[in-house]
Image (cartoon, rainbow, N blue to C red):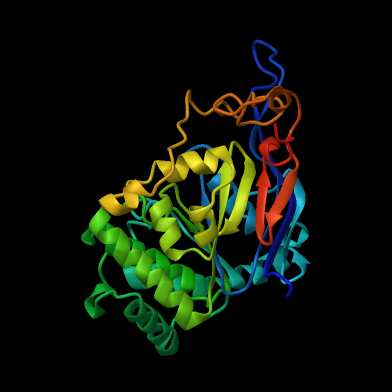
Length: 329
Protein backbone atom coordinates (compact mmCIF):
# COMPACT_ATOMS: atom_id res chain seq x y z
CA UNK A 1 0.00 0.00 0.00
CA UNK A 2 1.33 3.44 -0.95
CA UNK A 3 1.68 5.65 2.16
CA UNK A 4 -0.20 8.91 2.35
CA UNK A 5 2.99 10.72 3.45
CA UNK A 6 6.50 9.64 2.49
CA UNK A 7 9.45 11.83 3.50
CA UNK A 8 12.96 11.04 2.32
CA UNK A 9 16.18 12.71 3.43
CA UNK A 10 14.23 15.58 4.96
CA UNK A 11 16.61 18.21 6.34
CA UNK A 12 16.23 21.68 7.82
CA UNK A 13 19.26 23.74 8.83
CA UNK A 14 18.64 27.24 10.18
CA UNK A 15 21.52 29.69 9.53
CA UNK A 16 22.83 31.33 12.69
CA UNK A 17 25.21 34.31 12.76
CA UNK A 18 27.07 35.28 9.61
CA UNK A 19 28.33 38.59 8.26
CA UNK A 20 28.21 41.31 10.87
CA UNK A 21 30.36 43.66 12.89
CA UNK A 22 32.65 40.85 14.00
CA UNK A 23 32.63 39.12 10.58
CA UNK A 24 31.56 35.86 12.15
CA UNK A 25 31.22 32.82 9.94
CA UNK A 26 27.64 31.59 9.61
CA UNK A 27 26.77 28.39 11.46
CA UNK A 28 23.83 26.07 10.95
CA UNK A 29 21.39 24.89 13.59
CA UNK A 30 20.60 21.34 12.49
CA UNK A 31 16.97 21.11 13.57
CA UNK A 32 16.09 18.17 11.31
CA UNK A 33 18.86 16.12 9.72
CA UNK A 34 18.24 13.51 7.01
CA UNK A 35 14.92 12.15 8.30
CA UNK A 36 12.94 9.57 6.35
CA UNK A 37 9.51 8.33 7.44
CA UNK A 38 6.14 7.19 6.11
CA UNK A 39 2.59 7.66 7.39
CA UNK A 40 -0.17 5.42 6.08
CA UNK A 41 -3.68 6.70 5.41
CA UNK A 42 -5.87 6.48 8.50
CA UNK A 43 -3.09 5.89 11.03
CA UNK A 44 -1.60 8.06 13.75
CA UNK A 45 2.17 8.32 13.86
CA UNK A 46 3.25 9.55 17.27
CA UNK A 47 6.46 11.61 17.32
CA UNK A 48 8.20 11.88 20.69
CA UNK A 49 11.42 13.30 22.06
CA UNK A 50 12.78 15.95 24.39
CA UNK A 51 12.10 19.63 23.84
CA UNK A 52 14.42 21.02 21.19
CA UNK A 53 14.93 17.75 19.30
CA UNK A 54 13.20 19.02 16.12
CA UNK A 55 9.71 17.51 16.41
CA UNK A 56 7.73 20.66 15.62
CA UNK A 57 10.11 21.62 12.83
CA UNK A 58 9.60 18.20 11.24
CA UNK A 59 5.83 18.56 11.45
CA UNK A 60 5.95 21.96 9.75
CA UNK A 61 8.24 20.62 7.03
CA UNK A 62 5.79 17.85 6.17
CA UNK A 63 3.09 20.38 5.27
CA UNK A 64 5.55 23.00 3.97
CA UNK A 65 4.83 25.66 6.54
CA UNK A 66 8.58 26.25 6.40
CA UNK A 67 10.93 25.50 3.49
CA UNK A 68 13.23 22.49 3.67
CA UNK A 69 16.98 22.66 3.19
CA UNK A 70 16.76 19.47 1.17
CA UNK A 71 14.76 16.27 0.85
CA UNK A 72 11.35 15.28 -0.48
CA UNK A 73 7.87 14.98 1.01
CA UNK A 74 5.42 13.02 -1.10
CA UNK A 75 1.74 13.56 -0.32
CA UNK A 76 -0.33 11.07 -2.31
CA UNK A 77 2.66 10.77 -4.65
CA UNK A 78 3.20 14.51 -5.19
CA UNK A 79 6.26 16.27 -3.79
CA UNK A 80 4.79 19.18 -1.84
CA UNK A 81 8.22 20.78 -1.39
CA UNK A 82 8.36 21.62 -5.09
CA UNK A 83 4.77 22.70 -5.72
CA UNK A 84 4.10 26.14 -7.18
CA UNK A 85 2.39 28.62 -4.86
CA UNK A 86 -0.93 28.08 -6.64
CA UNK A 87 -0.66 24.29 -6.41
CA UNK A 88 0.44 24.49 -2.77
CA UNK A 89 -2.59 26.64 -1.99
CA UNK A 90 -4.84 23.92 -3.40
CA UNK A 91 -2.93 21.24 -1.47
CA UNK A 92 -3.53 23.14 1.78
CA UNK A 93 -7.11 21.84 1.78
CA UNK A 94 -5.74 18.36 2.43
CA UNK A 95 -3.01 19.27 4.96
CA UNK A 96 -3.70 21.19 8.15
CA UNK A 97 -2.17 21.74 11.59
CA UNK A 98 -3.39 22.08 15.17
CA UNK A 99 -0.95 24.27 17.07
CA UNK A 100 0.40 23.74 20.57
CA UNK A 101 -0.65 27.00 22.20
CA UNK A 102 -4.41 27.56 22.15
CA UNK A 103 -3.84 31.00 23.68
CA UNK A 104 -1.52 32.31 20.99
CA UNK A 105 -2.85 30.47 17.92
CA UNK A 106 -6.17 32.35 17.72
CA UNK A 107 -6.68 35.95 16.65
CA UNK A 108 -8.03 37.72 19.77
CA UNK A 109 -9.88 40.30 17.63
CA UNK A 110 -11.92 37.76 15.68
CA UNK A 111 -15.12 36.09 16.84
CA UNK A 112 -15.07 32.30 16.94
CA UNK A 113 -17.35 31.96 13.91
CA UNK A 114 -14.97 34.11 11.86
CA UNK A 115 -11.92 32.16 13.05
CA UNK A 116 -13.41 28.82 11.97
CA UNK A 117 -14.81 30.31 8.76
CA UNK A 118 -11.60 32.02 7.65
CA UNK A 119 -10.07 28.97 5.87
CA UNK A 120 -13.26 28.56 3.84
CA UNK A 121 -13.18 32.20 2.76
CA UNK A 122 -9.49 31.95 1.83
CA UNK A 123 -10.30 29.02 -0.43
CA UNK A 124 -13.13 30.73 -2.24
CA UNK A 125 -16.29 30.18 -0.19
CA UNK A 126 -18.73 33.05 0.22
CA UNK A 127 -19.90 34.35 3.56
CA UNK A 128 -23.49 33.15 3.42
CA UNK A 129 -26.00 30.88 5.10
CA UNK A 130 -24.48 27.67 3.71
CA UNK A 131 -21.00 28.61 4.94
CA UNK A 132 -22.38 29.52 8.35
CA UNK A 133 -24.17 26.16 8.52
CA UNK A 134 -20.90 24.37 7.80
CA UNK A 135 -19.17 26.34 10.53
CA UNK A 136 -21.96 25.67 13.02
CA UNK A 137 -21.89 21.94 12.21
CA UNK A 138 -18.13 21.75 12.74
CA UNK A 139 -18.30 23.67 16.01
CA UNK A 140 -20.97 21.26 17.22
CA UNK A 141 -18.85 18.29 16.14
CA UNK A 142 -15.89 19.42 18.26
CA UNK A 143 -18.10 20.09 21.28
CA UNK A 144 -18.36 23.89 21.28
CA UNK A 145 -21.64 25.35 22.60
CA UNK A 146 -24.09 26.83 20.08
CA UNK A 147 -23.78 30.27 21.69
CA UNK A 148 -20.02 30.40 21.09
CA UNK A 149 -20.12 31.73 17.53
CA UNK A 150 -20.18 35.44 18.40
CA UNK A 151 -17.80 35.25 21.34
CA UNK A 152 -14.05 35.91 21.36
CA UNK A 153 -11.16 33.60 22.31
CA UNK A 154 -10.43 35.25 25.65
CA UNK A 155 -13.90 34.22 26.83
CA UNK A 156 -13.04 30.51 26.65
CA UNK A 157 -10.97 28.05 28.69
CA UNK A 158 -7.80 26.49 27.31
CA UNK A 159 -9.57 23.28 26.34
CA UNK A 160 -12.33 25.18 24.55
CA UNK A 161 -9.77 27.28 22.68
CA UNK A 162 -8.07 24.12 21.50
CA UNK A 163 -11.44 22.87 20.26
CA UNK A 164 -11.71 26.11 18.25
CA UNK A 165 -8.28 25.40 16.78
CA UNK A 166 -9.32 21.85 15.89
CA UNK A 167 -12.52 23.11 14.25
CA UNK A 168 -10.51 25.62 12.20
CA UNK A 169 -8.10 22.88 11.07
CA UNK A 170 -10.88 20.48 10.05
CA UNK A 171 -13.32 22.87 8.36
CA UNK A 172 -11.65 22.29 4.97
CA UNK A 173 -12.04 18.50 5.37
CA UNK A 174 -8.30 17.68 5.23
CA UNK A 175 -6.90 14.18 4.98
CA UNK A 176 -3.70 14.80 6.96
CA UNK A 177 -3.41 16.80 10.19
CA UNK A 178 -0.25 17.65 12.14
CA UNK A 179 -1.13 17.81 15.83
CA UNK A 180 1.76 19.81 17.29
CA UNK A 181 1.69 19.06 21.03
CA UNK A 182 -2.04 19.87 21.12
CA UNK A 183 -2.48 19.01 24.81
CA UNK A 184 0.81 20.06 26.42
CA UNK A 185 -0.49 23.53 27.37
CA UNK A 186 -3.70 22.15 28.91
CA UNK A 187 -4.58 20.98 32.39
CA UNK A 188 -4.24 17.23 32.90
CA UNK A 189 -7.99 16.92 33.44
CA UNK A 190 -8.63 18.42 29.99
CA UNK A 191 -5.92 16.55 28.09
CA UNK A 192 -7.85 13.26 27.99
CA UNK A 193 -10.94 15.04 26.63
CA UNK A 194 -8.97 16.54 23.72
CA UNK A 195 -7.16 13.27 22.95
CA UNK A 196 -10.46 11.38 22.96
CA UNK A 197 -12.00 14.04 20.72
CA UNK A 198 -9.14 13.69 18.22
CA UNK A 199 -9.58 9.91 18.24
CA UNK A 200 -13.32 10.22 17.61
CA UNK A 201 -12.78 12.70 14.78
CA UNK A 202 -10.19 10.42 13.20
CA UNK A 203 -12.63 7.50 13.25
CA UNK A 204 -15.58 9.54 11.94
CA UNK A 205 -13.74 11.58 9.29
CA UNK A 206 -11.03 9.16 8.18
CA UNK A 207 -8.16 11.42 9.26
CA UNK A 208 -4.44 10.71 9.30
CA UNK A 209 -2.41 12.27 12.13
CA UNK A 210 1.16 13.12 12.96
CA UNK A 211 0.79 13.50 16.74
CA UNK A 212 3.73 15.34 18.28
CA UNK A 213 4.24 15.20 22.05
CA UNK A 214 6.83 14.67 24.75
CA UNK A 215 4.43 12.72 26.99
CA UNK A 216 4.78 9.05 26.04
CA UNK A 217 1.67 8.04 27.97
CA UNK A 218 -0.47 10.38 25.84
CA UNK A 219 1.21 9.24 22.63
CA UNK A 220 0.71 5.58 23.49
CA UNK A 221 -3.01 6.18 23.98
CA UNK A 222 -3.65 7.61 20.51
CA UNK A 223 -0.86 6.31 18.23
CA UNK A 224 -0.75 3.42 15.80
CA UNK A 225 3.03 3.68 15.49
CA UNK A 226 5.59 5.77 17.35
CA UNK A 227 8.78 7.42 16.07
CA UNK A 228 11.38 8.51 18.62
CA UNK A 229 13.43 11.59 17.72
CA UNK A 230 16.73 12.72 19.21
CA UNK A 231 18.64 15.85 18.17
CA UNK A 232 17.21 16.01 14.66
CA UNK A 233 17.34 12.25 13.97
CA UNK A 234 14.78 9.44 14.13
CA UNK A 235 16.41 6.77 16.31
CA UNK A 236 13.59 4.19 16.57
CA UNK A 237 10.21 3.50 14.97
CA UNK A 238 7.77 0.72 15.80
CA UNK A 239 4.14 -0.08 16.45
CA UNK A 240 3.07 1.51 19.72
CA UNK A 241 2.49 -1.78 21.54
CA UNK A 242 5.83 -3.22 20.45
CA UNK A 243 7.77 -0.08 21.30
CA UNK A 244 6.49 -0.13 24.87
CA UNK A 245 6.94 -3.88 25.25
CA UNK A 246 10.40 -4.15 23.69
CA UNK A 247 12.20 -0.81 23.22
CA UNK A 248 15.64 -1.37 21.69
CA UNK A 249 17.33 2.02 21.52
CA UNK A 250 18.78 3.17 24.87
CA UNK A 251 17.15 6.58 24.45
CA UNK A 252 13.73 4.98 23.92
CA UNK A 253 14.32 2.80 26.97
CA UNK A 254 15.10 5.90 29.03
CA UNK A 255 11.96 7.72 27.85
CA UNK A 256 9.72 4.75 28.62
CA UNK A 257 11.46 4.21 31.95
CA UNK A 258 10.58 7.77 32.92
CA UNK A 259 6.83 7.19 32.44
CA UNK A 260 5.28 6.89 35.93
CA UNK A 261 3.73 3.50 36.74
CA UNK A 262 1.18 3.74 39.53
CA UNK A 263 0.09 0.11 39.94
CA UNK A 264 2.57 -1.93 42.04
CA UNK A 265 2.09 -5.14 40.02
CA UNK A 266 3.09 -3.39 36.80
CA UNK A 267 6.03 -1.74 38.54
CA UNK A 268 7.41 -5.12 39.70
CA UNK A 269 7.53 -6.52 36.19
CA UNK A 270 9.37 -3.54 34.83
CA UNK A 271 12.96 -3.88 33.70
CA UNK A 272 15.72 -1.80 35.24
CA UNK A 273 15.33 1.79 34.16
CA UNK A 274 17.87 3.26 31.75
CA UNK A 275 19.05 6.56 33.17
CA UNK A 276 20.35 9.50 31.15
CA UNK A 277 23.23 11.70 32.22
CA UNK A 278 23.92 15.23 31.05
CA UNK A 279 21.81 17.59 28.97
CA UNK A 280 20.68 17.49 25.37
CA UNK A 281 23.66 18.70 23.24
CA UNK A 282 23.32 21.80 21.08
CA UNK A 283 21.99 21.34 17.56
CA UNK A 284 24.58 23.94 16.53
CA UNK A 285 27.38 21.50 17.39
CA UNK A 286 25.91 17.98 17.41
CA UNK A 287 28.23 15.20 18.60
CA UNK A 288 30.13 13.20 16.02
CA UNK A 289 29.10 9.65 15.23
CA UNK A 290 25.93 8.68 17.09
CA UNK A 291 24.44 11.87 18.47
CA UNK A 292 23.28 10.05 21.60
CA UNK A 293 26.72 8.79 22.60
CA UNK A 294 27.40 11.64 25.05
CA UNK A 295 24.52 10.44 27.26
CA UNK A 296 24.34 6.72 26.48
CA UNK A 297 25.21 4.27 29.29
CA UNK A 298 26.28 1.66 26.70
CA UNK A 299 28.57 3.86 24.60
CA UNK A 300 31.29 2.07 22.60
CA UNK A 301 34.27 3.54 20.70
CA UNK A 302 32.47 3.14 17.37
CA UNK A 303 29.59 5.28 18.68
CA UNK A 304 31.89 8.31 18.88
CA UNK A 305 33.23 7.86 15.38
CA UNK A 306 30.52 6.48 13.12
CA UNK A 307 26.85 7.28 12.67
CA UNK A 308 24.78 4.10 13.12
CA UNK A 309 22.86 2.64 10.20
CA UNK A 310 19.16 1.94 10.58
CA UNK A 311 18.39 -1.77 10.90
CA UNK A 312 15.12 -3.71 11.09
CA UNK A 313 15.24 -6.33 13.88
CA UNK A 314 11.58 -7.18 13.19
CA UNK A 315 8.99 -6.24 10.55
CA UNK A 316 7.93 -2.64 11.07
CA UNK A 317 10.57 -2.03 13.74
CA UNK A 318 13.52 0.21 12.80
CA UNK A 319 16.42 1.16 15.09
CA UNK A 320 19.53 3.29 14.51
CA UNK A 321 21.98 1.98 17.13
CA UNK A 322 25.38 0.26 17.01
CA UNK A 323 24.21 -2.16 19.71
CA UNK A 324 22.03 -3.80 17.04
CA UNK A 325 25.03 -4.67 14.90
CA UNK A 326 27.76 -5.12 17.53
CA UNK A 327 29.13 -8.70 17.81
CA UNK A 328 28.12 -10.65 20.91
CA UNK A 329 30.83 -10.91 23.47
